[in-house]
Image (cartoon, rainbow, N blue to C red):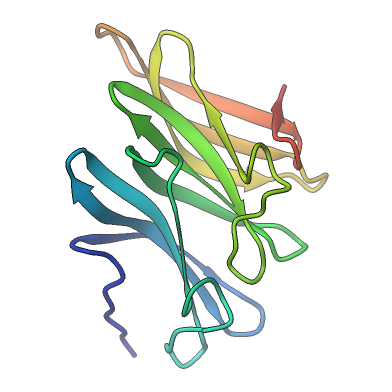
Length: 173
């Protein structure tokens, strides 16, 4: 089967999918919010096994959030914790800053305010534009992300990998 749906004001971009043990599907990406300034927000949808929205998740099956109110938040990776919470990572951009961020969503589709600061972690890599592209969870609960970073003023883009040794506070080591 196939399901088409629209959740934003304009363009929606789907990037990640996780099949849950109960047959439900988590689908993540980002959605256009506005152009003055340019704004995108992270969006995660939970669908029932039959493709309908799971209204017990978020607001009518949809979770939306931004790292910065007037910035661009792009979802790139998702990982499901054993407790049912979802950790997402991606870009956290505002003004001329390009950073990466993490946020955690509860099993019922709300921002988990016990994670990081008010549910999110934003990392500003000194002297680099950075974006995290993927996320993995170690068996001990540590969060590992990978992405790329480009030096301010130009230069060669580089890989980066970061591990957060405290999955609640998201303290990097």
